[in-house]
Structures are given as structure tokens and as C-alpha cells.
Image 1 (tube, helix red, strand yellow):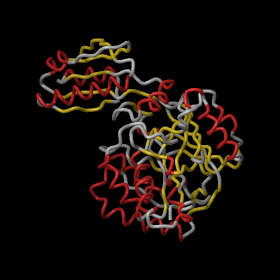
Image 2 (cartoon, rainbow, N blue to C red; image 1 turned 30 degrees about the vertical axis):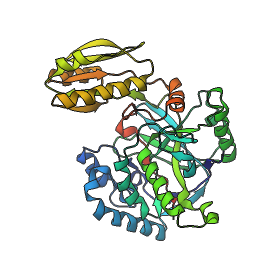
Image 3 (cartoon, rainbow, N blue to C red; image 1 turned 90 degrees about the vertical axis):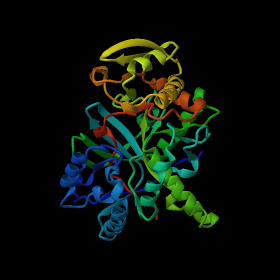
Image 4 (tube, one colour; image 1 turned 45 degrees about the vertical axis):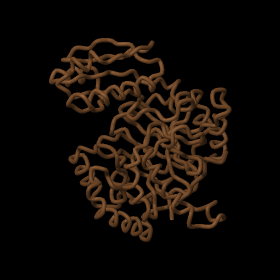
Length: 394
């Protein structure tokens, strides 16, 4: 296995105001323009990653914004905004959920696939929506840099990887804008040992034949765009150049799925319909797990499949068929039972789903492939990865 690579990472120079520099993942707060207006205000007055990304709330303005993003990347590179660091970065992120540790590293895109059932070391966790890839490809295609918000999960309940890390120079330590908490980045002195420790995880009993190393927890569509761009480039360069071309390798942050600060929650279903009683009557479930159907602010416990993704797939099929017969629409809810009760008092029906257990997660991906869309959530919007590190892709 040669999936993990030691990258040359670009960081802002030591004189950069890092609180202005680091901004949240582009796919967060997609309906909250005030959040991104505040981000723009906080980022103004100096170099900022905000000028190098396209928040998805502005996708309708992509044509005008992409050219400016590319020119700003080139400007930052030529004006000495960045300094280069060879190695891995240990990221310690303090959020409302606790301190989450991650490792910024590169992966070989030849070892990644978003196709269901693909037996590769790096796999998507949920079904990829193909129409979401082209806009990201357009952003990346002309970009000399990538700034990652992809978060990879690895299965290490003994914390063997983080326990082997030797800390070196502190590269940054600062508060994040917009209630993002605080982040500290430290150069890892023994990257080769860390790589060996990661590869050793694939020898665990459950995965000794599968060689499954990483599951993409966040940022799968951006990683899929990186893969698509690499496939375009690969067809235009010689075999020798393919081995080292910078676009072949994607910068990501790898996080232990067992991190106590990594919230792992179900995403519930809410059906907006005037036929809530008919929806509840027609819903048939079984199994040893428990879920709740909520109508008019009142919950009722129902059985649910022991294989939670299989149960969610069946539920989503039922919702789809129901909406063909009755007016309404489906929505995905991250909130609590109380929030669902409040919603259903105004109409519709909700289903509170069980969360996938962390112990089961890698086994489910290994045996069943991609999970149904919106099966799980990892933390609140302001806990997502902020853009800090960059890497050349040209």
C-alpha cells in the first residue's frame, strides 16, 4: 500500500493574521448569507483563504467568482504570502464538543473511489450526487492550489496512530472566526512512523483482506472533483510524469473515528404533508433497533432494522413512493426530538432515526459499500474543518 504521501504544505507566512486567514468549509451554512457576510467582514484587510474558495451559497455567481479566485491564488504565490513546510501537520481543534485531533497528509487519488462497492483504500461513505461534481471541477481545473476541507476517518480504537506522533515546531495557534473555536497546528517529526502506524490498521482482523484504510467523512464531493480533474490530466501526460504530478495527490485531514470530540449523529427525516396520518399508517418497519415516528407533536416508538443503513434505504424508498401519491416534500433534520415535535405540530410527520455506532461504521462500509444519502452527520456547522493549509496542484 502506498496511499499516504508526505506533502509539501503551504502555510501563510508568520506575519499573517491567522484569524483573518482561516475560514469555514465552503459547503456549510448554505442558506445563511449573513454567516458568509460576517466571514467576509472578518477576513477583510489582509490575505485570507476566503479569497481562494467559493462558498456554495454563491454557486450561482460561479462564473464571475472563479476567475478572481484563480488570479488571487497566483497573486498570493507570486507575492510570497506562503511558506513551505514538508511533512504532516497535527491539528488540534477545540470546539464545543471537545478537542479533536487530526493529521494533515496527502493521499494518492489512484487509491480513492466514490463508486459503491469499490475495493480501494479510500472510500466514500455516502452516495455521491454526480451533478454536484462539475461546479467543483470548474473551480479546481484552473487553480494552481488546493485548500482542503476533506476529512478522512480511520478506525483506531487503541489510538495507536496518535500515540506514536512526535511533536515538533508549533506552526500556528489561534482563535477561529465565527464561533469556530480554536486551532493549533504542530509539525510532526516522525511522518514515516505515522504512515506505518496507519497502514498497520488495515491488518486488523475485520479488514485483513479488504485493506480499507480511510472513509471520507466530510468533503467527498470535493475529493470526487479532485479525482475527476486528475483523470483529465492523467490522459495528457506521460507515464513518468504521472508518478509525481502534484494533481495526483490530494491534501486531507485524517481523524480517528473514535475521537470523543467527533460527534456522530443520525440525520432524521421529516415529511411535509397534509396526509401525516396516512404516512404513519403505511410505514412498516421491523428489527431490533428502535426509531420513533412523530405526528402532531407526539412520538411513537417503532422497531427499526439492526442494519441501520439498510433500514434507512427502505425508509427513503417508502418516503419516495409516498410522495408520488400525496403532495409534499421530504427534508433532512439534524435536530432533537423536541425540534421534531415542534415541526410536526405545524403538520407533517417525522422519523427520529438511530445513529450508526462507531464500532459498526467501517464494517458497514466494507461489507455494504456507500451508505444511503444523509445517513449520518459529523458535528455542527461551526465544527467543520477550516481552510488553513494549501498545496500546489500545478
